[in-house]
Length: 113
Image (cartoon, rainbow, N blue to C red; front, side, top):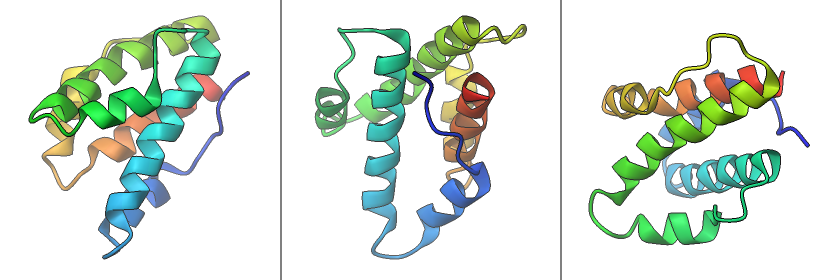
């Protein structure tokens, strides 16, 4: 079962709404990880545990890096010809106005489309 194709611009812009951004980002990451778990049939991937571990300093950066590999596997399974591990790019774009959310959703959409 593939995940939901979402508009990456809307996903990114909601991150800037005061009082909503924190919960929106947690929701997005949980949803992304859950969709990847189901699609990749990866029993070792636990979205709740991954988000709980983000309380540890710098684990959230590792999670973003890890998502690059998971998205690459999903794209390969979906038949995307030029699938690459873009974990480092996601981290770099996250420091650029949170643009990593846009890039992650855009890459997921390639696998889901």
